Length: 194
Image 1 (cartoon, rainbow, N blue to C red):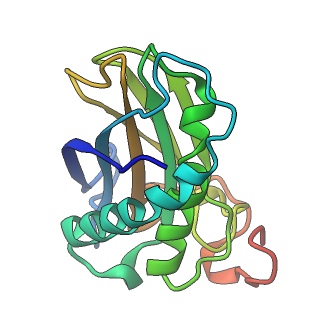
Image 2 (cartoon, helix red, strand yellow):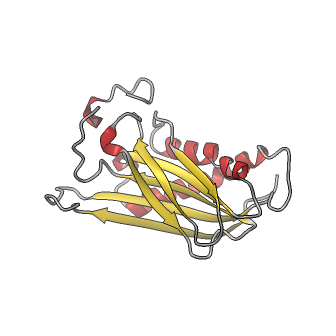
Image 3 (cartoon, rainbow, N blue to C red):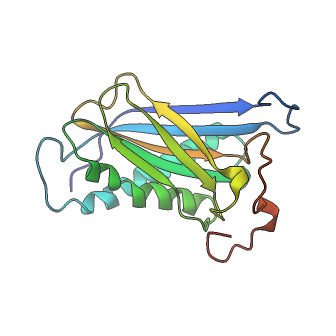
């Protein structure tokens, strides 16, 4: 498979103190890291593409480390995660699906083998396309307080022959979460759901 060629990284972190209610004792941090990479399959149909997932694994680990470092509270502080991809116009949606395994397993590995499936989304779009990356709790997808999304995009990416691959993490629940359901403190951790 071809080498992974990175054109640029973007790392963004926001710190949320309140959403109109009381100020949080510990602000929520939400962050994302984007790598804009060459799409080796752009412009043509290639039947066998799965080998590129192995090539993307080191990038996934590097991006997860970058994001944990940018959030600045260590891997043990991360409670939510998600991933996604924007494929440039000369590619196809399936090329974005190549990111599922290397992106998700990188975060799960660095976060202590988190149990929940990493939620994901992908789309085809041109430069400036924005995407909402879904977020759930790292150990139990049913924890409602952690249902969230982070919008990301880069003005000049992806170009037609590129992909923007994305990881996202949060340090906790939405700042004023109060809609009930399974609480993070009540996670059993048996199946990644509850």
